Image (cartoon, rainbow over all chains, first blue to last red; front, side, top):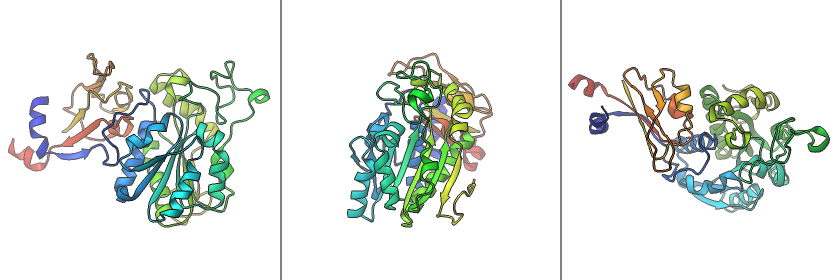
Length: 267
Length: 76
C-alpha cells in the first residue's frame, strides 16, 4: 500500500501540508505540548496573509525560546519579558514589517507584565501571541502568576493557596479597559473545534496590525503535560475542565470587524 | 479515499491524532524512531475521508494528507 501511494504522490491533490512559514527543524517541545499547535496556527496565518517575507518574530524566554528556529521568518531573541519592548523598537524603525512576539505566561504575565501593558497603552502596532499554561515549563514547573488555585506545582506542592500565592491573573480581562487595544481574544487548542476558532482569532490579530489599528493580543490557553503530570490527552481534558472556568474563551475587543467590545466573536 | 502520511522521525507519539480521528484509523506503532519514541502509524485508510482533524491536532506538524484526483481514480 505505502509503496504504491509513494509513487503516485505527484498526481495527488494536497489536502494538508506543513505551512511554509515553519522550518523543517524538529520542535524541542515535550510530546503533546500545544506549543506546536500554536506555532502551526501562527505559521498558517502568516502563509494565508502572504506576509512571510516581511514578518519579524520576537522570541521570548521560556520553552518557546527557540521560536526563531521554528518560524521561517526574520527573528530576534528578547531578554526575559522584554519582547514587547523589543517589538516596539523594531516596529517604529521598520513600520512596513509585521512584528509579533511569542511569549509564555512566565514571560508575559510575570517578569514582562509592565512591558506588555505599556506597549498596549501606547497602542503599539504589534501582535502578541500569549501562551498561558499556568506553569513555568522550562524551569521545571514552578508556580506562575496564572497558576490556578489549588494547582500543584514544584513551588506549591500542596496546591496554590490565596494566603501564600494570591489569585491567578487574568491578562485579557485586565487589558480590556486599555483604549489602545485593537484586538484581544482568549482561545485554546484543547479540541479540534477550538483550534479552528483560535486560528481565526490569530488571523484577526495580524489583520489588526496590517491595517494599523493598534495593539493586538491573543491568549492561547495551553497544556503542559510534563509539569501537570498528565498524559497529553488528559492534559487537554484538564484545560476544558479546570482551566476554561478560570480563563473563559471570549473575544474581548475586536476593532477589526467593527464588532466592538465584548463581541462574542465571529465564531 | 484520502492518504495520510505521518513523518515517523518527527512524530513524538503523543497520541492526539489517534484520540481525535473520527474513523479510528490511527494507532501508536510498535517501532521506535530515531528519537527513541513510538510514533503514530496509519492502521487503515480505506475509509479515510481526509477530514484533516489529525493534522489539525498534531503539535509537530508532521502529518501530510493527500486525496486522489478525479483523473487518477478514473485511470485505475
